[in-house]
Length: 378
Image 1 (spheres, helix red, strand yellow):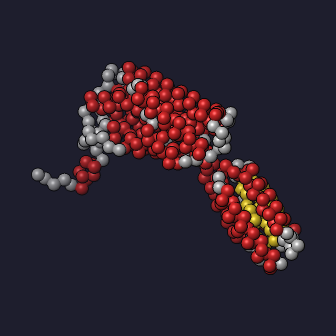
Image 2 (tube, rainbow, N blue to C red; image 1 turned 30 degrees about the horizontal axis):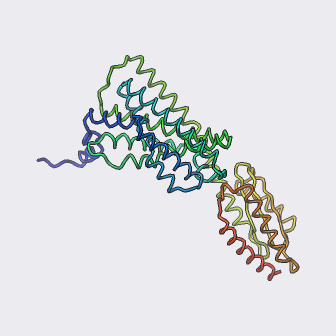
Image 3 (cartoon, one colour; image 1 turned 90 degrees about the vertical axis):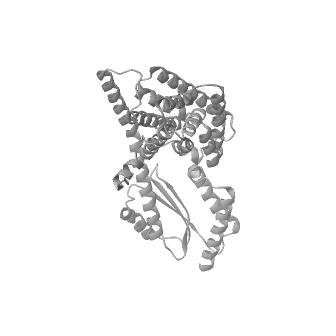
């Protein structure tokens, strides 16, 4: 037997047809995964409750568990497969089942968040509100992995991994949180993320089905095929544009935070004055710096304000608050300064920081030590 060349080995390694299952087996696998029956509905409700609790308690492990058991992937892949094979019966059945599942999930999560005593927006909830182009890429490659795994003779653990990566259940539950809290922005953002995941997973399923040359149930007319391709292309563009805008904003925010860090570390270095707190609100373009120790004179403050341009922070509104430390400053006054500042931060940035009380207590102790050092130097 002739030994394979390097390029033949590469071609074989990337071939989708090497270990593909029969057409009948593929259709049976995909059809069974899209069916709506008692077991799937029970598992769906269980996963809804688990995902909602995970989002509510900011528990990543709980959310991952919900994604693993969620049955939403089945009908989404079936929709893409049925479009590629022109299987109208499977398309109608899987699409209807998907709509029913999503509706039940949305209603259930809304009810949960409406009765839950925990009303705070956690980090895990906020992570599902502003999808970016990276979420689109995750959905694309996740969809590819999902359909390739389903069409193999030997089924692997690809589908659970895809369920975790593409995260279909958490966005629906976040949308339910948006309804329960009457926050249109959260509802719209989470719904958009779910649509991104669903559309591109289904699209990749259709593309791989075509690549595998699975026979169609009925041949389409050329004009009909063109219309479908045109509609899909338009929908792709419509789905991607907002994610690109969100991605640009995310990158800009990252650069702003990095520049603020450089600005503070480079310019706010004083012998008898220390930074008590820094609060950055990128959305509002506001930066608040609280200094404690020997007061900085007006000329030095003007210089600090002028140096913003050097770090590309001209659009950031800077507020510098100063608290002088003297020998007569009591322990109660120190506590008041610290508590007022922490209260200010929590009122504006509790969602982003999400700090535990124990962490704040440690921070207070560290600040007290710095204040004692300043009092000793004054």
